[in-house]
Length: 504
Image 1 (cartoon, rainbow, N blue to C red):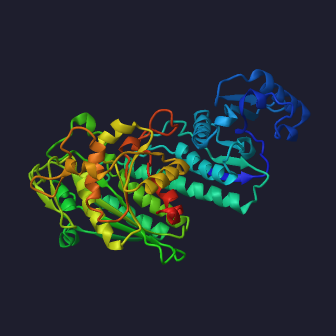
Image 2: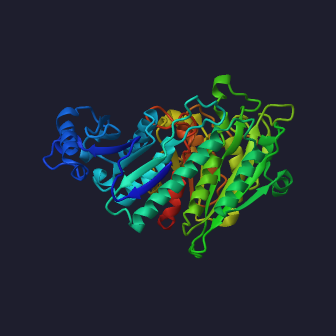
Image 3: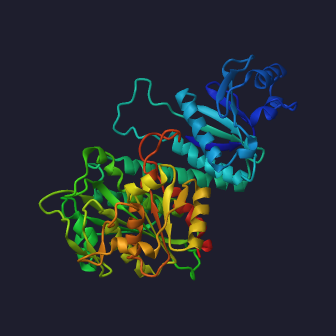
């Protein structure tokens, strides 16, 4: 899909011009829509009459009307609802819905007027950035392993945004950044959707290398022997049951414009390319989507790609421990004690709580960079889904100031977060009997917090944020996104990088 700015729409066959309005007052206003003023009188009068008197559909519904003078020319009216309730979420959802509508109707090109959405405090730059992201996200489908229908997959070729300021460099840059982020979200979804047989730790490492080449990011991959020398007992322990060897992926982006006095950010993403649960094997119905258990690692990789492509003036390191968690005669066992890179030991009570075990080594490794902030992103717990549902990421942070900033980042980015507790009062939950920490909590309650407080034990005294993206790992009905991985976390991490100077 090509997304671009124009000063005025072009009318042509197989193209729709979308005319939007807020509620009935705006629909029936005496002053006609600016688009109508550019049309022949007969067409303008007819379309204005339809808009005022015949269009009575409910909020955010679409209606197609053909020009009287030329049936090949098409207007699609869209009711945006109440202007005073228009916000970031509704704008993003409208963009997605418009793309899905056009694809369903096999309309390959369409235009929207940016001025139709001037409401509340949403700037033109924000509107364009969000449009770029969400249009591409809605257009993406995972059809790699499906046979195309005879008529081919529906394709949108052009998405035209009409603005009198179409030549503005600021608007062009905003749209470009949104397109970049949308492309990387979709690339993250593509990786996460790959079946486990096609997405092994080594394949994930090779994907990181390709990202490094195209985005000009330094990529280093540690093999098994290097991890042994470093003492990464968590990663090595979890990977023992698989024929696929573990990989520890390190990505680094350092802008020449980064403040040399500012410490780097470290993002650590869980990279379990398939999770059977190990010897504590999962029930079959809970194993089907476990090829997506590397979604946190994919989010880190593609967030760094977007940050590098946007040339943000920051220094960021991404860490992705990549393993398979498989049952075999050589698997790690319940009751095993694993020594991590920090020297702390993990008492394994359940082999299906493996994500936190491999992240323990990643977080310990992160300390060597003396970072301003360590952030982990992982499909860590089903308990987080129970706690917050499937529409927000579960957020854990070591200070109220961090929490406030993360909530703002979530709101602006579109990857909404909601805070859960991670206080020291929960430490007893993960205190080990024979090891320093246990990899599951003592209680059946508060499992998301138990996972987060476990991770906190491996970050030293550095500020720490944990994003449990299990709730948002997959798309859900009503989001107007294709079924499968959502790319959760990519937009959040990019927005956080843009706000590095606000991190307390």
